Length: 289
Length: 147
Image (cartoon, rainbow over all chains, first blue to last red; front, side):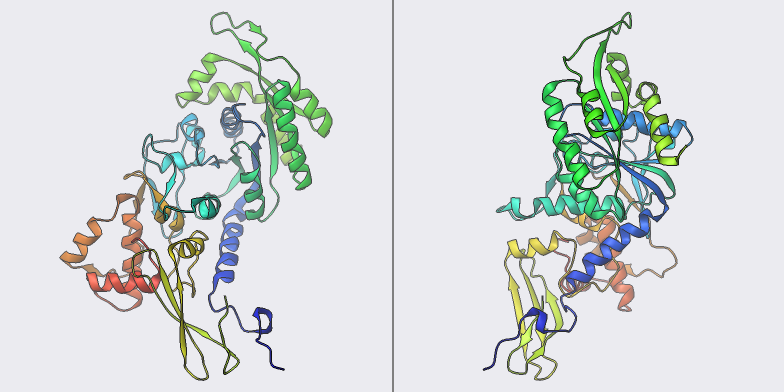
């Protein structure tokens, strides 16, 4: 009895070439990142905890410490870190080999959807109008892939990846990278943040990602006038998360309106000051000091 | 994707690809034994599913441009986002007036990349002057939906 042969019965190569092209995409990422010593994702399960502020502070601090540092803004729909690093406005030069990243404060190399989108417009895709949910995630993963593979990052000591809230983008990042990234977890002190970020910590652990530590942002309120500090949120989420995960509490960063204003205006120096201890601890882990 | 000629029991080879410009795609596969050709016709959603991966059915014939998926898929990109340098070390084809006018209609966000793709296609095919006809052929052969 004859039987119609099926996919695996045909031993010839896939003539559509789709699989080979996806493999080539992965190979390009590996090739591009061969000169990047460390990839560190800044993540949180919760929105509004100041991940981008922390990313900006870590990046500026690493640059201040003499480390070649890049920042990839993986928050494709709510990009903010490029402006915090003073890296917005200029054209991105395209050569045969790739797109040159924007240059931010202290020579930071930056790529963000903020550099690509017209002012005030959301990230939108030129796709058929129906069933957008089917491919939107794939397009976003494709954009992240191209930020990794098609940007001429050059030799870097650290590539920081500013992730949006939730874990979808982290999962995509982990699958795209040739080796596992480390993560820095950001929380605010509140119980709600603790519960939300705890899930992300568990997700990172399940994925086998090295957790460099926890940053508790908005740990207090620093008066813009007298610099005295007072409580802002109840709770000790940073300390509890660090204790549970057996990782260091890298920093407790007060909310300082003046520092925030400076960072929002593109000067990350105050954020670097606030995260100086975290930068030292991170470097000690990355470089084995 | 694999295509089987059931009568010959042979795997079919990729033959050609066409994009009529309405979001659909046609990809033809030919049996190496009996030369019978069949075409796979995809609707806009199926076409988009493949395009979203940044891949082309049948493979690529010219190198992928930097950030090709992002530049071709994003709507509302900044006009001044990119500064495209001409490819180094290659003799570049010229553009006739009609082709230039057509290129002018491409959004600035993606225009430099489109220009490089058409120029690469012309160079690869020993075409000295790019005309609208050359652009049509390149768009279809390379799978440049929307360009």
